[in-house]
Image 1 (cartoon, rainbow, N blue to C red):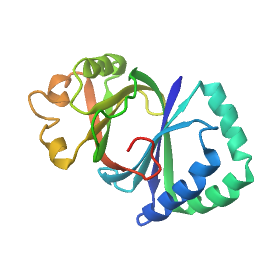
Image 2: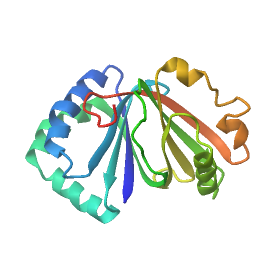
Image 3: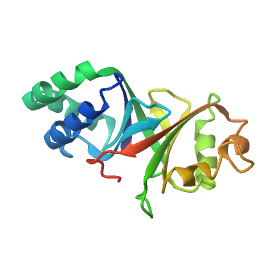
Image 4: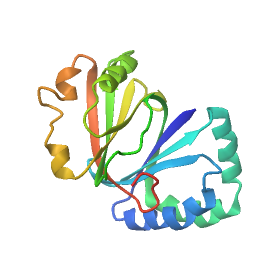
Length: 201
């Protein structure tokens, strides 16, 4: 099993149109036949004009084959790709190995958070295991990257609301930056909202 995190940076002002195309064209055309959609989010704070989508594949060879089949579909090329390409500035793909496999939120989530923690070379596995051993409240999944930016840990969290998120600081005595400072070189955090078509809501 391999999870795939795709982060698309959109042109400012393009989010509404992109989300409409994703919900009404991309998701119906794809279904779960070309990878299983785990979640789909729009950036609000941090990577504000970015879209995050998380997919699951049996393995990389299956993913490669299914992507070729998807790209051959006229509906995908003509109704989706032709419309979204002008909306995008860039795309980034990360292939992820689960350390703490994705779990459904135990309580309603109003705000999701993606943390991208770049570790010192060779420290991503140890960092991910340390975070998984004592995860922050709301942690839904932790991965290391096997391709894309390497030496990176991806953490997905779900929060009831912004107040709950900011009640606990990354910089506090029990925050990940204090606990694991020796292994971390850089952190990006983005607060994101689930799209209407996201399985994780």
